[in-house]
Amino acid sequence: MAVPVNAQCVPGIEAVPVVGCLGVPISGHTRESAAQGVVRLAREIRAARHADDVRRADGTKHTDGTARADDAGHTDGARAGATARGDVHLCNAYTLTLAERDPELLETLGSAALNLPDGQPVVWANRLLHRGTALPSRRVYGPDLLLDVFALSTDTELSHYLLGSTPRVLKSLERELRSRYPGARIAGTCSPPFRPLTDRELRQQAEEIRSVDADIVWVGLGTPKQDRWSAELCELLPVVAVAVGAAFDFVAGTKPQAPSWMQRSGLEWVFRFGCEPRRLWRRYLFGNARFVRGVVRQATRRGQAHGPAVPTGSRSPESGPTRRPGTGDSRPGS
Image (tube, rainbow, N blue to C red; front, side, top):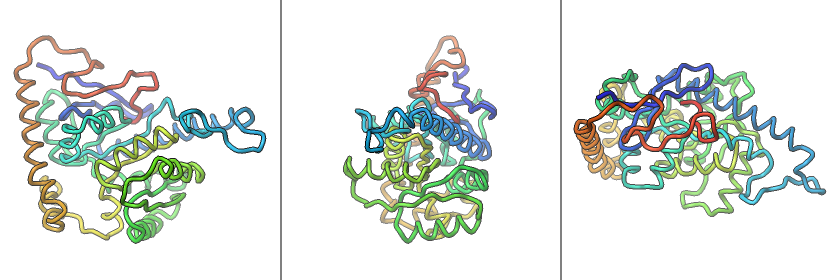
């Protein structure tokens, strides 16, 4: 039976299919189209934010000139992106197995602007589960996306904010990015505490990002923390927030990357496990097994399903939550 998919796109970018893997909608972007989609989404949200600022300049300030907050805690300009969510998630096998057992994370990913296949096994699983759909054969690797978006946004109005990791890693990362892309704008950096932040601290962090007029926030806090915070940030601010995982360490050079042949062969996890066995053994020992079981279970369900194909644009049983085109629930950039 043909597998129904949703074809979604950013204006000016060719539409790509969105398929379901363990209940999470994954966009079939190539490396190039993913970076273009993130940049275009950032430009659209920036334009909406600045237009909203102009409209509200006179009518939404107190007599003392301070910004007025609404009942939800949003400050002026924060509602500009309310019709265009900007959270982008790099999904590997570990992310999807966590979401399968965590309804809150599943909902976060299901309502995201864009989910990209960061792991090669996720690419293979999608091509197996959706053989009737043209999907790329290579993943969208987090460090590549970071570098590609910086390259595309060099000498433009777009600015970046680096959120996560340690002060040492952030310093090395900023130095590396400024060296590679001298025309890129880095509006600020922040290394938050590893403990969970209070609501007040989260709002203060959002206010700092708003005050520097950042357009793209790169969030490297580890899954699932970075996914939740990216989504929360996009609820508070009209920005693009990319949950980019270990890309900070890899681009900064503070952690080694797997050789290219291991990445192409889906064996990056073996390399990373060898580098950090104490931290990663549980993730790979149990997480990989859960991912394989989940894919087999989804393939079995699809093989047992019968009946007419659902028209394109409808939601398939495996695709997870989708959003209504043309409304605030659309999925820009995918």
